[in-house]
Length: 233
Image 1 (cartoon, rainbow, N blue to C red):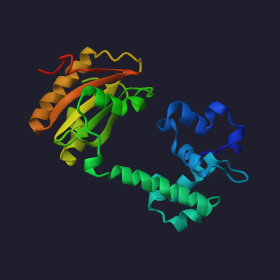
Image 2 (image 1 turned 90 degrees about the vertical axis):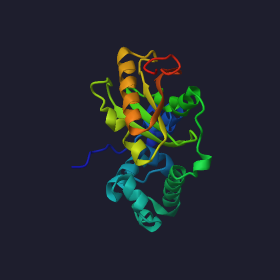
Image 3 (image 1 turned 30 degrees about the vertical axis):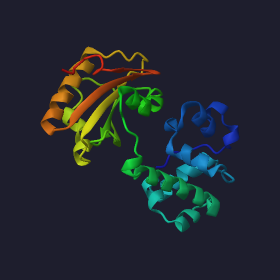
Image 4 (image 1 turned 135 degrees about the vertical axis):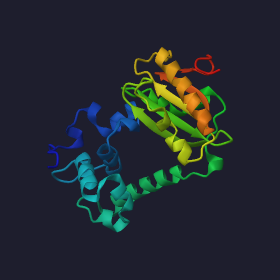
């Protein structure tokens, strides 16, 4: 059974709950897919606000992959969409696709722990629980992919070290940088962080994938375990 949703206008919502205002305050990563679609749609229709239209569009077309696969004409046919809104949605999806397939020569290069931290800090500093991400690099230290691997409480007994290298192996990456956050805002590495780092480095040697660093993000601060000599020889 589909979730029941109250019918009211975006303007009837508290300012702090409106999609555009939440994006401005916290960044787009905190918004749900229907809320992101609502920003593109701008307005709803009688009986449905823009967020509700976003929910229905996702339901009827099979989620974001379904909207991606649907033709412009098929999106236009959805109730309350029309040519202008369909064009906005398809254009946004195409921009995302092009960003994902950006030419290697245009990809950012990581030359220091600060470069790596800057790439993720804005998004990671807003997370409410621990996550472990893996930054994949090519032989020239250009970013290949950001693998958001684990979410939840992390320690060396819970993390399957081999899984950290899954995407690196698939994408033939030369090296990786492991990054996780401390939602408390204190980036001081724990004993378990150091133990996990050692395990990851040993696994990387077996796979011939260099582990360049392990960063801990805490709010606007970050710590490089390699720079501090923690877990690295």
